[in-house]
Each structure stands twice: as C-alpha cells, then as structure tokens.
Length: 225
Image (cartoon, rainbow, N blue to C red):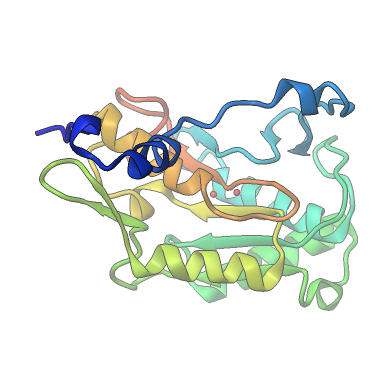
C-alpha cells in the first residue's frame, strides 16, 4: 500500500520540512547559465561513456573477456589498443569465470602485444578472480521487488574508492545479477545500483553479457566497468 502524506494533520512547522524532504531535485538554470557546459566524456572511445553503466554483449566465446581485460590494461597503461586511443587511469577487472592462472596467462599475452612491462601496471591495473566463490551477487530482491544490496556491493565500492578506478569490468553479468533478466523492474533497480557506485573520474562499470534471449543483453551466460 502506498503511504499518503496527510499535511492537514501535521503541525504547521513540519509541513514545509516534509515537503522539502520529499521534493524532487530540479536543475538550477540560473546557476547553470553562468557555467560553461561540457560534453559527455568517454572512458573507452565511442563505447563506454564516463559516469554510465555499459553492457558488452555477444555470443559465447566471442572474446568479451579478453576485450574487457585488454581495454582495462590499455587504460591503466595509457596506450592505444584496437584503434582506441584512451587516456590513462586506474582500472579494475574482476572475473567469476577464469582462475588466477588464466588471468596471468592472458595478461602476459596482452602486455606482450601492447609492448607493456607487466610490473609497470602494479597499483594501476587491478585484476581479481572470484571463480568458485559463493555470494558474488551485488544484490538480492525481496518479495515486493525491493533491491537489497549485498556485502559484495559494499566490497566493490570499497575497492573502487581504494584504487581510484575510472573503469571497472565485471565478468560476467550472470554472477553479479541473480534476478529475473526478463523483469524490467529488477533489471532497472540493479542497473541503478551499479550507476550509484562512485567511480573516478566519473566512470561506470561496463558489464559483459552474452547475446540475449529477451531483455537488452542480459540473457544467457556467454559480464564487466
């Protein structure tokens, strides 16, 4: 049942306070008129804008994991890759699919292809394997559809703050989202939770998903910032 605010039954001093507390935030056009606007910045040119959640989708074994780790490496090193010229910023790549041996093997080949000394990436590129671990989901859904953040979401936020990451790649989506991918409400709440993560400088997590059956690239397994 929806709560109804009965302003008539409130003391007069509380009415304005309650209205302000429930006010929908609006742009201050007077203030904005004195500020030069800026265009949307892209962390991965033409693919992943800063301050947004991006889903990379495709068929299984299409190379989504390799692509995510490669662009994270290029961003951390400040080099171009795949004809994508990026800036330089810390990046995170977390996988629930591959173990540490595979991450190391892939990283070695990526560094060799890009002409990067792997040791140079220490403290800038942050790789982690969550394979085999339980409770990797970032949230659960109550019977009424309410999104309930989990400890993993808090841990991810703490990692982002500690590393100052501008790009976070979560691999793959099915491990982090355990709701109904055909339920628009659950999908929207989950994406909003990702969008609320504090990234620096104003980037959001590209997620890698497979080519979907149904809703917007969030279907069957094939997951990324």
